[in-house]
Length: 333
Image 1: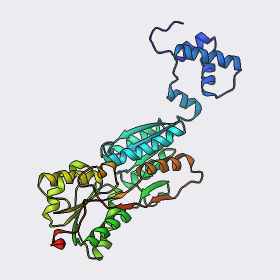
Image 2 (image 1 turned 180 degrees about the vertical axis):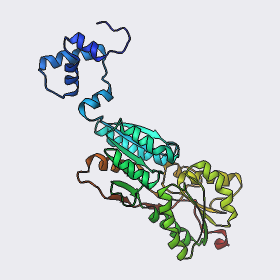
Image 3 (image 1 turned 90 degrees about the vertical axis):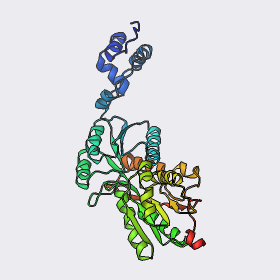
């Protein structure tokens, strides 16, 4: 058969090799042994015609797709992208493909997105899920393998890997208090974000220790930070704690436009330690989290954890002090 430019099918391969399509499938999937001569003849025809098997069809025959699905709230977020990179690297090492769905911070879209992705993947990594607890519990019973990154559902024993966000905020609050700050602003993440509720848990003890913390609604990206900068300044706080580095970068841009010096007039902190935090001026004080390791851990829990249900794996963050924090102007007086 001469190639006409059209993509070869399994029927074309079977006809050229003088065998049945079922035999071609057995050779390519390894589902059943065939003679060496027959295997060589089929593979020679496959190579000559440039035949590429349909992964979905092969998955049905093998009982596995050799794919992992990842549902993320925002691919534009550098932190989320690093988690995805960790999953992808681990999957590639095991000869798995990675299928990704971005739900654009829409909690209502997550459930159906994950269920649809599960049709084409052997397991699902749900990153920073915003869906309600009841929906997530239902999802866990309807997909064969599910691991959550930065989300825990009370009463649900499925595997998850999470950052200790409360510990990270405690480190930031202690750092600012030691510098002399007594009134600070926390720019909150999305209302539906489990990680924001975890951050909020640390604010009570900080207040009890003498730090006046004003919490303002904000969001999870640079645009939200940009929009919230003036409201943060209006509180009279001498430091701003942003939900994430991504948010902090938006705050920093707006403060510069307003002529507000960081840290001369107000200190600023982020969370996650994305690469940009070292490159901006001033470099950002933040909390370091190895996002790629979160992704690699999610992979291990998904496919390498023998005992189920697996416990929650908690990762402790560390404080990275840079130039965006300093004693308040009144203390320098």
